[in-house]
Amino acid sequence: MIKYLSLFAVVWMINAENAQSQNEKLYYAFDPLCGWCFAFSPELEKIADRYSDQLEIVVISGGMVTGDRIGPIGETAPYIKEAYKTVEQSSDVKFGQPFLDHLFNEGSHVFSSVEPSIALAVVKKLKPDQAVKFASYLHQAVYVDGLPPTDFNSYAGYAEKVGIDRETFLAQCENPEMKRKAEVDFQLSSSLGVSGFPTIIYSDGKDLQIISRGYSTEREVSRRLDAVRRGR
Image (cartoon, rainbow, N blue to C red; front, side):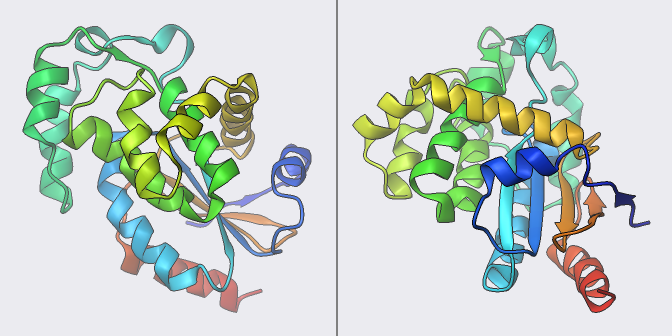
């Protein structure tokens, strides 16, 4: 069921972060460490290909692993041991052996959404049209290539793939303004009523409507989105 939300609690953040943008928007609330978001990434890229010339797609980091949730992966994410198999069975993605061996089974690397969300904030500033692609790269860095989530160097090679040189990217990751932008994303996600990831929300400039929660296919999201837009 599509849920209607009030804009009152979030309009100031949306306006501050997305001034001069189109009226129609599709908000993608995700987390770089969300396994179901990893599964949804290929579907989101298809959605972006289909709709990017019709509406603005805004990627929002949800802050799933922040505060006291941050800690060694072996302690903070034991559910992954079985959950990753369910994700693979329900989608087309595969978790890489480097992740399973070097991050999950080894268990000491810290799981934190903060650093990859800062990395995304840098890309949103320097190459905003590449935000959807880079969000997918964040999942690839951790869940396929098994790179440490809290090390900005883990994402530098992917930043180069979207047209940002390594030195510039790493310098911007240390910029306090980028951490502030990541924290604004966390707040915006919460204010939008996001309770799980991934969540897709449509805005016609006046009202917000949840299109999907959790993993879904591009076909299903597009069907729901088209129905909502026809009813404007």
